[in-house]
Length: 284
Image 1: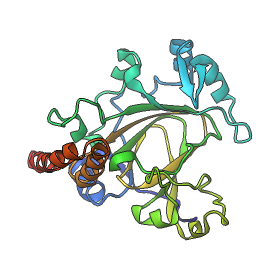
Image 2: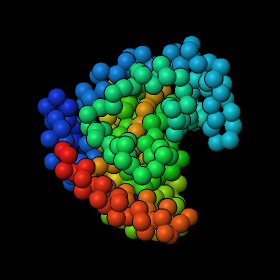
Image 3: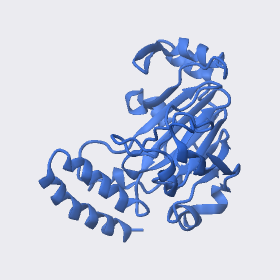
């Protein structure tokens, strides 16, 4: 797997603005790091390892089928190293946490809006937007190379510490050995050193590798493969989303998912979703 670039565009939100973001990154589906987009969050400067240890030490979290008191986990995370990485708390739904914690990360940054998954006309009572928390230590890694399910966009807001990301464009999928049962997840378990015997085409994959720093927001467009490793004690919040730039792909995946349970419902849903996307596009 070859890294073509070790840099990524970094744009200040005050300069880039909604129009610049839309034209240069959102619609062309190009990743970017946005600075200055989450400065209004109370979580900035507040959410530290000590904060979580003091406020939520006894809260039980689950990692790979094992439960941990958060205070004990934070101690392990701060002692983490590449040689002995601590368990990585990931994809922790913040809707399950106290309201006061959720209030620390509102409103969402402008680059993550609009999010049509939260529109009142979306045809499901089940939430399709997930705001998630990640807390990990040096040496820990996200366990899989993947793109976000249903072709949603990912926005990753770094609140504390540093991470290193690997990202590959959708056209690299032919070299990434997607799982048959989960086509958005790669079978490659080590992006830095893929096994050439198991994955002989992986050497042809081309991607980018870059760091995400505290206070920055990473936009990973729909269909872009990505994974991360943690460089220092890290706290991140993510949200997924959909709008005009990825609505067609999201609609296709969403209707296919519904079709696994009811072909009739999926057939009726497709024209509705298409019409909804057309209407919301005109409301810009």
